[in-house]
Image 1 (cartoon, one colour):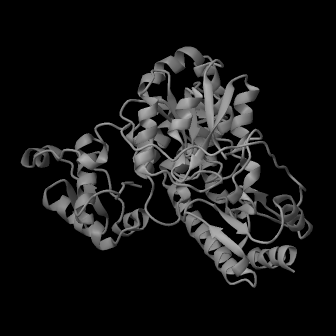
Image 2 (image 1 turned 180 degrees about the vertical axis):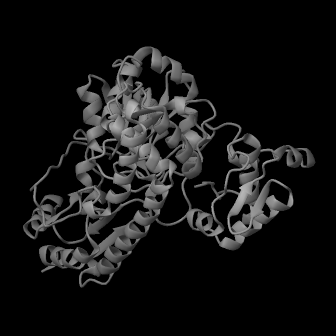
Image 3 (image 1 turned 90 degrees about the vertical axis):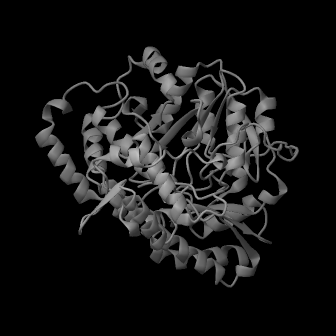
Amino acid sequence: MLTYSFENIGHAPLYAHLYRCIRRDIEAGVLQPGEKLPSKRALARHLGISTITVEGAYGQLMAEGWCTSQPKRGVYVASDIEKAAAAWPKIEPENSERPENPAAVPPSPPLRGTSPMGGGEIFTAPLIDFAARSASAETFPFSIWTKHLRRVIADDADALLSRSPGQGVLALRTAIAGHLRRFRGLAVAPEQIVIGAGTEYLYTLLVQFFGRDRRFCVENPGYGRIRRIYESLGATCLSASLDSAGVRPQELLASGAQIVHISPSHHFPTGLIMPISRRYELLGWATGAPDRYIIEDDYDSEFRLTGRPIPTLMGIDALGRVLYMNTFSKSLTPTIRISYLVLPQALVQPFRDRLGFYSCTVSNFEQYTLARFIEGGDFERHIRRMRTLYRRRRETILQLLKKSPFADRIEILEQGSGLHFLVRFHGAGTDEAIEKKLAKEGIRMKPLASYYAETTMPPKEAAGTFVLDYSAVAEEKMGEAVQRIGKALYT
């Protein structure tokens, strides 16, 4: 699906901005002659705008000859683009899209002091698990997946038994490149993509590629497994704290880190969305030395449930300092261990020279099946179904909490995106006490404090704050869950 930002467009009409975005993609070859554009309703829903806005943009594109309409089929990029290009002057990028000096952004507030604390698991078999971070079995499209698998076995038998290239089979890398262009607005080539059995495997490749002598940095708080994997591979792994806009660039600079691993579109666990000013500030940090890079972890970008899609950091990186990473674990199921890494063009050949001897760790069966699943449009249809399901779950749990007898004793902190949000429990005791009380009632939920590095003390406002991931909790279980929470903490 086409993805554009509507931030900082001034007083320009929305339809005019959308028209300019689509036309630039046509001029740049991102949208090819004869390619079908999304339906007006689907694009409006995806971008969070009205169908009238999309209709206005499409009407202008057709009036100028950039697109054509086929009755009962939709709007297509015109096959004869040269006529339109000759008739109209080329659109230049708007000044607001990229500042002349990305580093020239006011510094963040001063650093807050820290000291040691940690957290841990209490039990393994909860009745209702708000920390699972996984998809449930009933949401997986078994029949469609099986259909593609059978076709792969019938049509691609020779390829299935051939050795997979180290970066993955071309069919899957091509399908992913197309998906990124449509859904995330990223124009990347299949040769830039590396397929791996899970993001954890890709982390190990990155350490081997960059070298164990490099200083990696992760967000604090953050997903602790990333830090542990880097450290287990012998790399130095630092932590940088966050402010309201994300990781602090001045702290990153002071640490001497060379590579920073971040999730700017939806930070885990706080849910922060990094604003464009901080993104350019981080790009400014990356260009300050030749060995600095940013790893953009876009782990649940498909599930921004409210507002417009957030553009990628790689999409605004003009100097090739961002490596993009995503996974199918959240969108399909964690048991299909397929993730991918997108390298800047300048790193493709060095990566092949250094690590090209590896075989791909994902079976050909799964690679070719997923390629067909994406190419046939089934993946995007699955994402739309899952968005509807998760939006309903999110609204249900939020309404139940807001209408509960203890609503005045909790605070909901959420950014309207992703599959989790934060809940702050007032007057319920310490984090450890809250976790144990919930566990006795069969509720598993992890405190925000447990996601901070062991060498730091979480800020005071983290106390009593828990991460509630609703992705694996059935809607019919949520009423019971809220009752159990109230019984555990406020009776």
